[in-house]
Length: 413
Ligand SMILES: Cc1ncc(COP(=O)(O)O)c(C=O)c1O
Image 1 (cartoon, protein in one colour):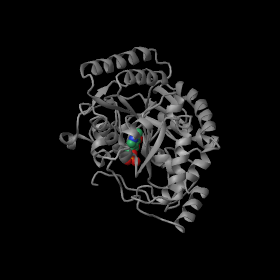
Image 2 (tube, rainbow, N blue to C red):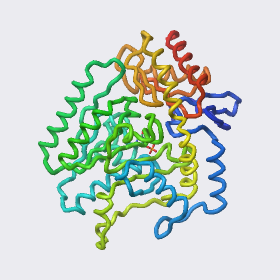
Image 3 (cartoon, protein in one colour):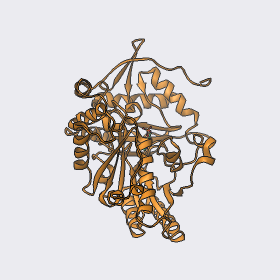
Image 4 (cartoon, protein in one colour):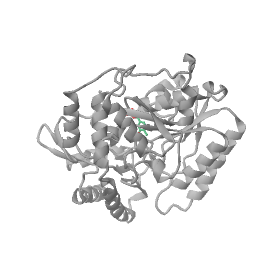
């Protein structure tokens, strides 16, 4: 609190714009931490929530269900690759990941391989702030005080790539060789590998190629290790396809969804698994059941918002945003103060060349954030990484203005 910058009081939002109490307007260039899919106060979603609130606002999910929960589960399963069939609701990205890791861990106990207790992760990963999710993420400033509470998860190098990267194949080969080494060293001991497919968000908007995930999947399958995709960020069109697993033609055993699930209106998450995982819990013996629940599991308002958001996604506005972002990337490539330009669907990221250690704490991040704010743009660089991840309702002129200001600020630096 002592070191915090003054907080801004937001009065309202409309489309890609937020209006502050003092009348200032800000263009939300990061979808309010990657949740706002279609725009702020999106009328159809707001109306769906209002209608649902007048009918059923909440009911416990133990022994009860309701139309929005059932319909949403069906719609999610229809949108995902065919093997992903069973939906488990929770509250946010972190709990979606907790559910996935608990499912994976108990899966092997239920199927008679209790020695499979280890987890694999990618270097630079971020999966949330609860203890299990932190354990599966990169150790950092944020996790340091809790490090003794975290369980180990072996890290595989992340073959981060960008436009004009000549070393990508070598990096991928090294990562796969490392994974192969770990699998050979601990045969029959890995329960699952957890990863953010294609884009590592909080780790610096680092991106990898689809081919890497295809090769990774082959290795994991060969050693019968479950593959868990954390699509909390990449889901619902962000990568240019509805889900990263579709863009990469890979099929995780378990997928975690949150953030954009409700279009950014309400906290709701889903962990969806395939029939093999589900079957391991489908038993007469109560000790094989999956005991996990939250007070607001499958909250009807969240489910109603998610259904309205899925309706809006049918228009595939993320495809035009993908095209416009592609146009802008050409401009970034030409700037001498920028490097490692990368894009995946609607997401663009670039690193500012700086003196000293790059990374989350680099002061250029807060400097740019303040200067963007002063110009009416909400951006939060991750250290020297600037990323642009707007809601799908942004228009081409608004998008272009973000890049115009970025260039002006770079000249001022
Ligand atoms: C990939 C990924 N997984 C999980 C989370 C955690 O989600 P939440 O903040 O909703 O708990 C995040 C949050 O940024 C994320 O980017």
